[in-house]
Figure 1 (tube, rainbow, N blue to C red):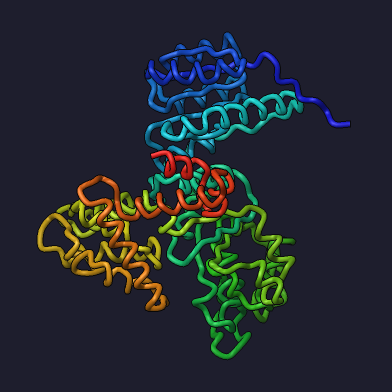
Figure 2 (figure 1 turned 180 degrees about the horizontal axis):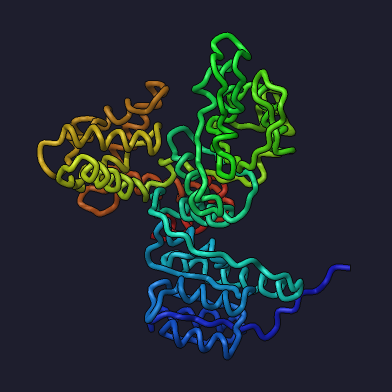
Length: 475
C-alpha cells in the first residue's frame, strides 16, 4: 500500500530586498494556501528560519550583511534537510554549480520566475513533504573556489551547470554527449574541479586520435619488451591518474578489445599492463564523452552493451551553440578578453553589426569554431572595434554568402536560408532584435499554430524548454 504524503500547513520564507518582487511573489504563493514569511536581510532571514522553521526558503543571492549562498550554508548547517531555492538576476557558472553543490534545491534566474515560480515552489514543497515522510538525511558539502571555465547564460547551459553541481559530489561515471566542439572537455574538467578528487590528477585522452594498437598501451601501460618498440616499461594513464579523474573523449571510437579491459577496471578496479601478468589496482573516476549515438553503436555491436550501461550512469547533454544563441555574444567577449590577457593586447570590442552577424551564423563547429573565429578576428582587426568586415565569416552580412556557409547543404537549401535571412534582416532593421531571434520566434509561432496552441507539445517538437517557448510566443 502506497504511503500518503501529507502536505498541509506548509510555509515559505522569501528573502529579498526588492519590495516589488516580494509583494508579487507573496501574492502568487499565498494564493496556493501556503503561509508566507518575508525578510529583507540575510541575518534576519536566518533568525526567522530558526524560529519559524519554514518548509522552504526562496532566497535572493545578492543579500546583506552576507550573501544568499552564505545564508544557504548557515541554514543547511542548522537543518541539513532544509529546502532552499536561490534566485539571482545574473547566474554565473560558478554561482550555479556551487549553489547546487551546497545542497540548494534549485537555482533560478529571476527572469524565469514569472513562468516557473509556482512550478518550482510546488516541486520543492512536494520534495520537502516526501523528505519528512522518509526522514532521510542529506549529506553536507563544502565550498571549493574555482575560476569559471564554462561560459553561458542560456537556460540550456544553466541546466548543465546544475547537473555539474549535482554529479560532482558523487563517484558515479558520467557520460557527456554533444556535438564536436561544443565544450565537452570543459564540462568534464568542471566535474573534476568541483569534486572531492579536485586535488588529484585530471587527465584527458582522445580515443579517436590514438591508433588502435597503441590505445591499450596508452591507457594501461606496457612492460619492457612486450612488443616491438617497447624498449622500457611504460606507466599508463590509469596508473598516472590514480585517485583522480580520467576523461575519455570520443569513447565511441574505442576498439572492442580495449572496451573489454576498460569494463574490468570499472567493475573490479584492476587491470594489467600490456605484456604483464601483475594485477594492478587503481581508483579512477571515469568521465566519458561522445558525439555518437551510443545506443545505435550498441545495436550494431560496435560498442559493448555492458560497458555502455556502466558508463551511462549519469548523462550530461551539452547543446550545440546554435540552440543557445543567447550565449554567443557572451562567449565571443569572453574569448576576446582571454586573447587580450594572454597576448597583452588591447581589449577588442564587438560592434552591434558584428554581434548580429555572429548570432545569425549557424556555427557548425560550435564553441571551438567561435573561439577560432575570435582568434582570427583579433589578427585581422584594423581598430579596437570589430566590424563585420573583420570577421572571417565574410566581409559583409550578405544573405547569399551566409547561405553558402552552411556545410553540406544543397543549392536549394542555401537559397532558402539566404531568403529567410534576408527577410529577417528586413524585419529587424532598426530594432534591437537580432535576425536569428526573429527567425526563432517565427518558428515557435508556427509550431504553436500547428499544435493548436498546445505550448508543451510545441516546445517538445522544437526541442526547446517550455519557458523559452512561452518567452518567444508572448513577446
